[in-house]
Length: 433
Image 1: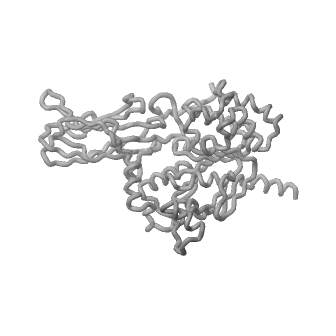
Image 2: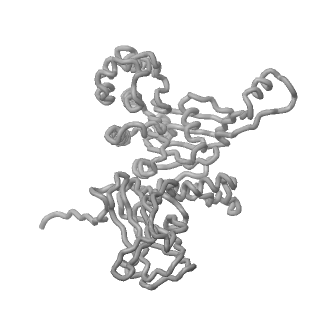
Image 3: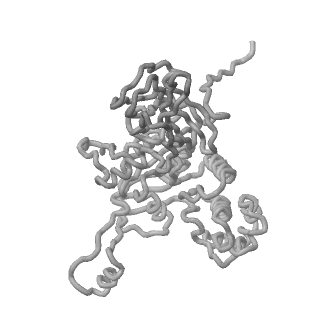
């Protein structure tokens, strides 16, 4: 009996959410809220907004789970309900284990207190005695690494110092469940690396981690399982690759609900246009120049499914698309694209002449669709794509139309090697004879 009971205890989830609903009343004008509160008029003046609508999910002990979705999908709302910051309209939440949460920057901090006073304040709220916090203080201060600023009021802190101290407190109070919202994106790259190293330690210790992030690379690398939310509803759960792929389809309104192939339009017309614009990654301030004897009229990226996107999974196939209209005779147009990293270093690129793909002339009024298809070997991160139509008029090199930093693209990777690209090495270790 005892053994069976222990087994059930081990198998019970760290977090179980059942039928979770969170409804907000939205008013067109502030005075409408007052009128309704005091019972003036019989007409209902509010609209109901479902931040969460019947969400069910389970998170097992020792899992690292990500929650992804567009803005307004309910990601932060569900974290706040799990941690007790918000109350649900209906539904149940069961949590087994001590939770430490890093939700909004500085949540739970008193702005007038200094850093050390806030450490003791937060520790006391978590149920620790002053002596227990005394023991934890050196590790907290070492991790935060903000120097003498710990003796200054936190209202004087930069956002980076704020998140350093908040995260240092959150991970050093021996939580069984760590919940992190987007706050990590505030710290610098070195601090983020430090935090993710701590994630790895937590995973090895069997801790449960739940985090919301727009950083698809981190979701892919650290998560065992991912939940996809949209407009307050749970669309699916699965491996990071499966859910990131589904998320990209949600962005352009092409996600099909299970069993309902006709329900392709998760977004309204205006929302769909806006989502498609964002999904295209087009730079509104693109730098362009050239003789304009040829014009790049349209350009975008598609993934290995043919879906327009700006998120490409490393190792998968993707295509760069250009549509070019010619306004004059061009004897031998050359179509090109190149990749830069965010610091402006040109990494790679090619063109139709190098690839020996198109060596004909073009005439006024002609329109050409050009595609470059290849496997993504770049390391995970953010990149900018430049496009161009050039050529030679006799011995003179001409730029007909060039677009610098035209499209942003995110490479999603769970394995980054050294340098700009992955050699995709096959490694074998065998016993010496």
